[in-house]
Image (cartoon, rainbow, N blue to C red; front, side):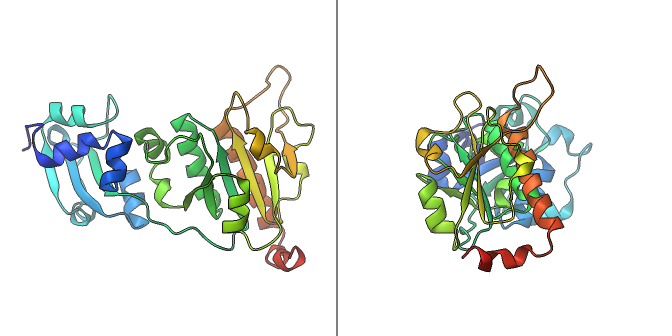
Length: 269
């Protein structure tokens, strides 16, 4: 039973609430068994597993999860709550290595997140991108750090399931991730073009911007098209995560329906 905040592993876990320490240690915190399982499945190493000692009988950790951790600590309830990032945390927290996925070099669909500061939105966008099976998520300047604990939590561990690529502008995305001519489609609430009227089958970058300010002016100069989601009268917008998710799944729907899609590369070379 760990009861002291001076325990080295507890001190490490609490330090990871700060961005500087996360990057120094190349580690982050993951709360909840499902998110931890996802991280492990995609290559994360669990340096330590912290269990809420007051709930181990109510919510026992499975043996495969315990076996995957370098260390397992049973932590006093009060200390566990102080270490977690939420008021009512799940009974297990992992100290895990940061995602290490290499950027792909021949992409067909990439999500670019431009200046989105809300960690819940960014985490949900990453989770949707992974679920849609796209190639990567590019993070433009002004976007919240993807290792932020709220991003990790709202992604449900999906930050390990898809490459996250920090870039300075759209040009870097095209040069680093695509081999063929690429369209840049910006989600823009005021656009007259519906999101389902464009051809998502060719190599594409979907750009989702800040809910209030939209995408940056530099990003807008690269836009091939701006699209919006038609909505009922009196409703003028959706949050960034919902909008981006709808567009991502429309893109993958078109590609799934069109069985000739794999040949599109040569046509667009």
